[in-house]
Length: 484
Image 1 (tube, rainbow, N blue to C red):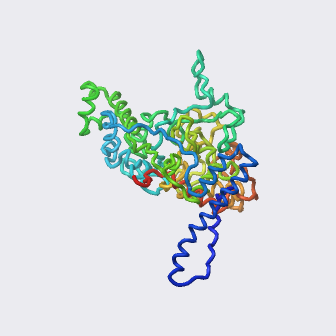
Image 2: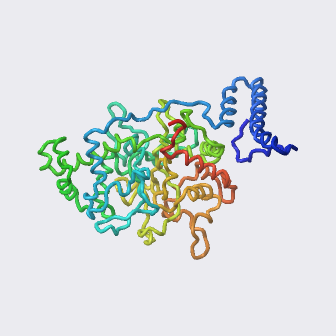
Image 3: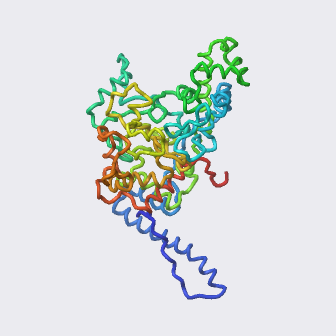
């Protein structure tokens, strides 16, 4: 028995009473209907159990889940410990929130990574504004800094360097070895049979930073962000800060004469702040509490979860893993791998006014160490979906601004491309218009729902998309369980 549907509750019989007793009778009808439904469900379960005794626990779970919205198999999640911030993390907190470190004197890390917006941008701009005069337009949307504490360094496929006695292997070597190897099809709930010879891990949309420390320095010297000309400029600004004494307490007086070390320790402090402060990885969503048996999902949310995990429908969990790990770590809703999705070009970005410019992710233009590994052109990091419903900009080029647009892209990209992409002067649909044609073979057409063909029925109905969005809203942090 499965009640995961959008069907309305059946109308209750009206009866023939009127007067004072009618209200009482009417108020009892929902309770009577629920009781009758429960009896019927138990009868159906008993009959099923006689025929399929091995599946009785599964059936019990479905009955309970569908009646109450409770998780039939709650788990205990292992969240990061909450402790007072170390002196290093407290220093990092001040650096993170200090606009004096920018060329304009008006922009800090927190300006684009707002704590009130899940450490993402505080507005709905496709890209943020920065530069020495706060007039320069960025290249890519600012990603959230939440849930990065378990992010591994960038790598490609199995790490051959892990084998005893093995010589270190470069990214270029790994990428070359991956050429011609068929990528694993990602099916929700199923471990891929083929090797995952794809990029994974790292920070930024293209994974070019491997640690939070490496990530922290980049905006400080990016000409369209905090816009310092050199690392030395940042070090000089650090020497003028009101918290300079904290550096001396932690590292000694000599650090004041070593600008490279001063900057390195400052960026390490920012990384420690992001790791230690629980606001970067709260795990306080309704879904977390549902996993623990402390919250109930609505019918729409339950149905959305089912569709999210359904390998023949949305298949979201193929990349955005939704189950706790075997050691009870909460799901991060990303496999941290890279995908070429073929999202449409965002003509509102200044660089895209140049028809010869293409942002191709892993193979350039902002990283160049594996630019010759063209089998990865167009691939970008799969972000976490936690707090995605609080965002106002999506994908690496910020082309979409709400979850409905995102879901329509997944649903219609292959079946109805005319609803996703522009047309050229002759009226032909320009599919995959934000990637050069020679790299279109990199775009995912194997994983559902992208496995549909032109003219096929889309994988999801409008109602199903609405239910998936309802479920995704349960991934927002800050949910309060009853009694808390």
